[in-house]
Image 1: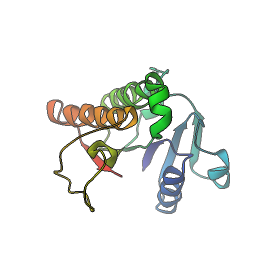
Image 2: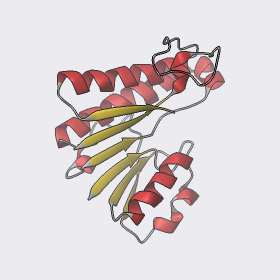
Image 3: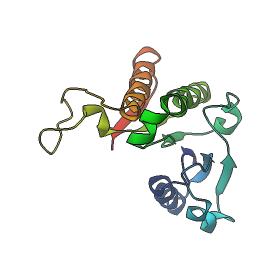
Image 4: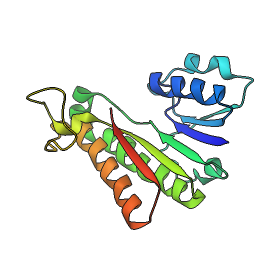
Amino acid sequence: MKTLVTGGAGFIGSNLIDHLVRKGHKVIVLDNFSTGKRSNLIHHKKRNVRIVKIDISKNRKLYKYFKGVSYVFHLAGLASFIPSIENPNKYFKSNVIGTFNVLQASKKAKVKKFVYAASASCYGIPDKFPIKENAKINPMYPYAFTKWQAEELIMHWAKIYNFPAISFRF
């Protein structure tokens, strides 16, 4: 089985890759290494893992990596509140444009399932915990807003194009 993971050099992505490899998946990792670490993947150097350094927000020619892929785990994105206030354009490009590019390549490749790592930050600052999934959406920072926009984009594609997607609000 062939699986693609964006942001695979990060903590969650690298642990997911470890699990996928143990289950026998051939994995393609797309990461620009802006926050993820190569050291998280070094133990996969000679295994069924192909690591591609690429910025998904700048490269529209992603499709070649998605050919024959069954599952996509889209974990890539920028994830800090204060820097998103200082540079919202960077967060929009990474989290929305990057997601759009990955989504288009996944749709073209006819993947079996698209899994998105959204963010519970879309709820804003909660009054009580745990946050209920049907709580009011209230993104307070550009980071939260761009993650929510990307989630909306994915779920719209799921509805309009019958695209097999799911979103988890970490």
